[in-house]
Structures are given as structure tokens and as C-alpha cells.
Length: 200
Image 1: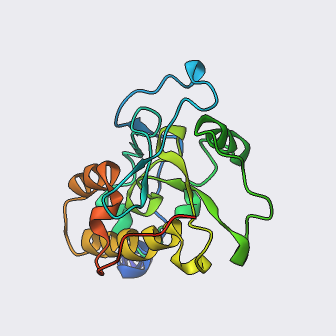
Image 2: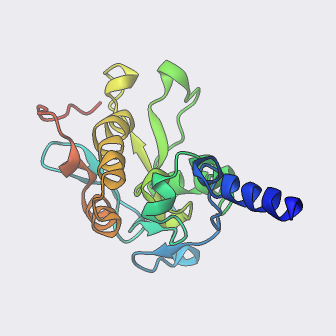
């Protein structure tokens, strides 16, 4: 009987909050594109950036429609143990992603790191919002080069769109709706007023 009581206590302990903090199990190779893309038929320069009303760039929906990982649910994103590294570079390699530069007719910048970083192969729907690591969800987000790195588009998207939306999802906002909206135009979620963004 003592053994049964100890076993029951152990089950109760592991069913508590500490157990819930274990990293959620996801399938890093699961991906559902928002529209089909025939990458085999795409040639360098076939993809073209668009620009929002504020001058910030948007990907070509025929090349980068966005894609979600259906195993990354709102409950997964609310789990403090979830890390985006559980998915990154497991469906597509860094080398495969670099091909996207050529499809958009962009030469990969040299020394593209730290304060010299001018481009990022960004997830249109971020992994932190349930985006997948598929090529349908990756595009080269660049510049402008004439502003400090923290004011470049990929940093603005991180700070003023993605982080805000992640907080909304954790507060109960509908994840699917947010995924569709950010895929359509991420700039609509910039929460602070900005002037027309300079390009350079």
C-alpha cells in the first residue's frame, strides 16, 4: 500500500505545473503553404518585392505566400518551454534558404552580420507565430542600409509586429487569423507611428 501511495504522489507531482513546462512535442517538418509554389520552375529574378504604403517591403505572394506548421498551436506557443530553435533549419537548410536571394534577384550581402547586417532571410509568418521553416515562408528582407541596424526592416518587423502579435496570441487572440493577416501585409501591425520608410 505504501508503494501505491508513493506512486500516486509521483503521478500528482509530474502532472503539476513543473511537468507542463516540458518542451512541447512538435513536428519540425510539418508545413502547410497558404498557396502552392512550384520552386522547380522558378528562375533567378522571377520573384519581385512589393512595397506597402509606408515604403516597407512585402514579399511576392507567388513565391512567398507564407506557410504554417500545424503542430505549432496556440497552446504550444503559450508554453514557456517552447523555443523556435525546435523548428529552425530542420525542414530547409540554410543553404536551401539562400537560393531565395537569387529568386528575388538579390545578391547576398557580404559580411551580413551584427551592425553590418542589411538583409535577413526572414520567415513571413514567424516561427513564434506558428510559421513553418518551408521555402514558401522565407523571403529576403533587406535595408535600408542608410539607417542603424535596429531601424532596418527585419528588426522593425521583429520588434513592432511579431513580438506584439505573440503577446496577443498568448492573451487569447485567434492564431489562425493573425497568421493570415501577417502573411497578407506585416506592416499593418507596426504599432507606433512611422514616417514613410527611407530606402537605400
